[in-house]
Amino acid sequence: MRSLLPAAFVGALFIGYQAARSQQPAEAKDHRSASQAAATTYEHLATAIIEIEATEDQLVRSILIGYEMGAQEHLKAAARDAGRRVAHLEAAAAEVTNIANEGDKAIQAIRQRLAKAGHTHNTDVETKEDYIWVTNREKKALLDVAARIARADEQADLAALGAELTKAFDAAVAPE
Image 1 (tube, rainbow, N blue to C red):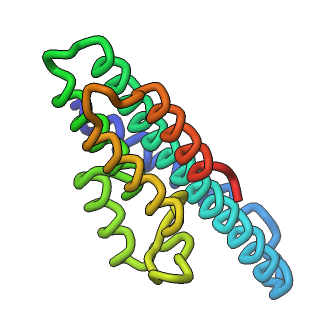
Image 2: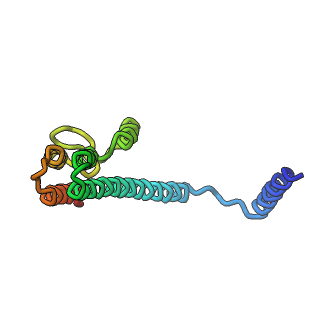
Image 3: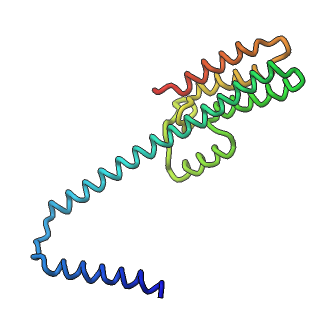
């Protein structure tokens, strides 16, 4: 009985639609109104595509911000915890590497899937690689910071490394 109610409802709507349609005078099909409808629909689609790409850009930016925050926290923890200093420095360097690559392995796999489907963003002039935020030059700078963090010894100025990271990160995610 419950499954008959939706079917009856849809049937009643269809009959009402047909009755209302048969009472209206037949209008000549106008090619201009069809073209206008197609153009309007296409305009809505273009707007949606542009907004989806902007949303993806901001999602990737927020992911990169998360990596940068994690790296900074590991640098602070390395300064406080001498016993786990090396582990924190390695974790910080890994987070900076994730920034340079615009994602960890899971994020990169998604980006590769999108690229295979033809979805691209910006192409680096030197490497011909696709990127959203981090250009080849910025990637090199971030990887350099990651290497310095990974090699930091007990005398290293972790606050200075954090400042270098901030500078390289801000350059990478700045709007073009």
